[in-house]
Amino acid sequence: MENRYSGTGKRKNAIALVIVRPGKGERTINGKPIQEYLKSEVLCKDVEQPVNLVQMNESIDIIARVRGGGLSGQSGAIRLGISRALAQTNEENRKLLRKNGFLTRDSRVVERKKYGQAGARRRFQFSKR
Image 1 (spheres, helix red, strand yellow):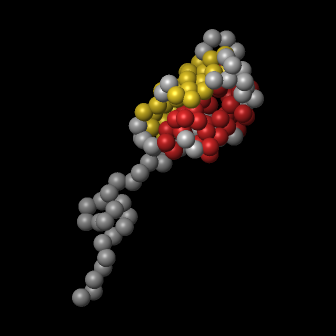
Image 2 (cartoon, helix red, strand yellow):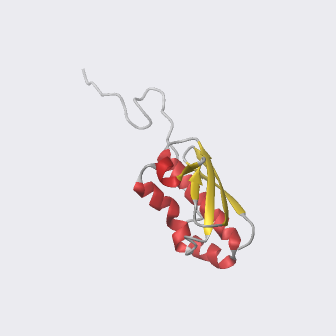
Image 3 (spheres, one colour):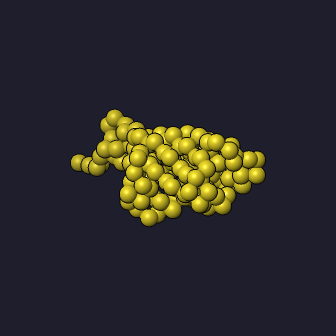
């Protein structure tokens, strides 16, 4: 692996630009360590999944700039960005990541509220009389 690779990830309303480069295993999101930014251990593990899959834990640094959405959407966007960057490193990584579903964007977004209803699907209470 030479120089650096970048990938863009999106999930819900979050957009992440991720840079992967050779290093000592440092992970930063918006200038903060990953545990400090995401706060949840589950979200941290979610972000680390593609790195663990290709077994590059200690050999790469990850720098992410993310905006929009909440922490869950941001972690999903970062995960997709990391996966796309790692897929550029070599063809074996790409096949492995594709097989495990890390290169597929999760296209689910919040459904809009409809007029005449309480929410996207919830109706106002029906009264017969």
